[in-house]
Figure (spheres, rainbow, N blue to C red):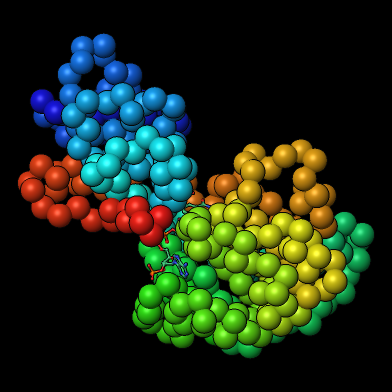
Length: 308
Ligand code: NDP
Ligand code: OXD
């Protein structure tokens, strides 16, 4: 009876109940019995210090998060133990909905109409067809790909940018650092869905934002480290950017004294764009364990050298 340790920070018992239903022949625990027995599977987002380093018989780390930079940075992932990141329908649906909400709210002037409503002011603002707007999605992976597809289905002109060439139907693909400026040139909306790696840190700076059409929207649901905070504020204040919808930040929770909180053109959500729903994710995580036990290659394994 192989042991699965559920070390998710949120709702571990909820995950455990569903794991027991999926894998009844396994022992599913949320705290480790002090019996020294091997624990081949650990389900975790950000491990408490010592959790991974002290495990015996660890075979697979199943991440409850799509982004694994903190898990890798813990320095506790043993060499040779695969880390499988979260790719599941619930996360995908959440991200598609969240980005759709932000882009459409800006595109249809909702943010500006909220200001007008606060003043009891009735005045139609200019409306633009989606087909007249360019949206660039940074990242064309498990989340960026479906987000780009959704935006294209709404009629936007969509570009994607990735490390290696990717084809997303209905979108124009750009790949590699040299193609970034072209991918962003004249974009009305820039959506970041890149992982946090050494290559993506500080990528969205004043220079990149100034490639966009002035008055546009930045949407960041990837990681806060991609954005240079001071440059974002500067771009908003000099008008090269119109608004920013931010879900992720360099420091989370966003510190109370951070200027983003009070900026009238910044719209904040607390890293809630896409959450890991037990109902959809446990089926995917259980399948990872089954694949491992059948001796099949795992999917969505993190490439540690790449960092995602
Ligand atoms: P994937 O690994 O599936 O996709 C990542 C994409 O980014 C790929 O297209 C990849 O290119 C591209 N990429 C990575 N590095 C570079 C680079 N240096 N230059 C250009 N492109 C690059 O990840 P997901 O789509 O599943 O998730 C993306 C990120 O979203 C997560 O890492 C996490 O940070 C964030 N996230 C945020 C959530 C939230 O609630 N705010 C929830 C879940 C995830 P290539 O295709 O060539 O490999
Ligand atoms: C993330 C996640 O990586 O919540 O942000 O999965």
